[in-house]
Picture: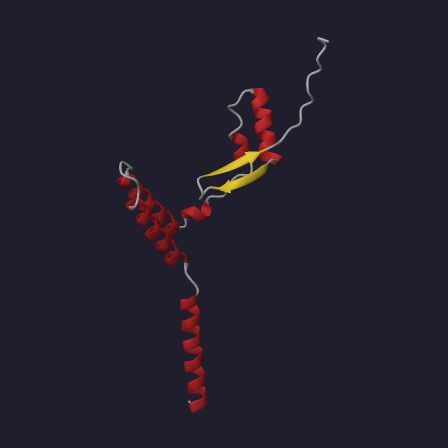
Length: 128
């Protein structure tokens, strides 16, 4: 093997190694998330169930590593399912909010707020 070929092969090997280490793998990302979850459990308010928090963090890491979390696909009808137990009038409003309301907030921030403004004409007064 000539010196230029050896240099070329060595350069490719170094570039490949650098490129592979620069891209985070799903496992390293899952491990980082696990470490964040553990830190959040440790910093939880007094009285919080830290053991359950740690178990959930471990379960999430295991599910990520096994690919279980990738199999879960949210259903577009899931939001509408939440409206089903409501009385009929409220259910129709709930379904309208889910389909065309504005959304603010985030799950990470503690909650999602859905809002739909409906204009209702004022009742006429006949007591004049």
